Figure (cartoon, one colour):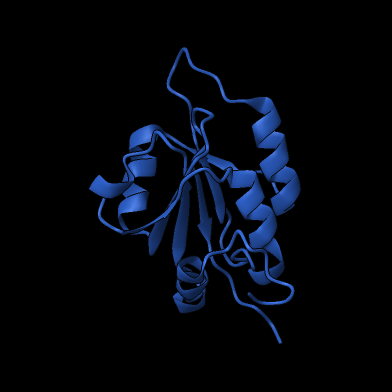
Length: 137
């Protein structure tokens, strides 16, 4: 146990976050996401919702300020919709609006991610892609 660090951040996830460098991508995947078939290392965080993980992450991490879209969400396929409350929640936690990637473009970008955190998020299109920035001293 560490003071000041959320117990939601497992030792395995903290290790991954520390290993990541500027520009590396991490994906917070919903429970429906094909995490294990896309290639990157998968960290299982079953039962934990993505907004809760984001709240735990924000004090420890910076989004990349050198790119236009360090925060992306999966765009719903025609006929489906996003959960507006979920989008507002994530936007409020991260302090910026997301860019949206078409489903297969999101999968393709995930293939080059540093890691995938497979969560218990059950909302459709709950997947989030974050690009790590520089933490200034």
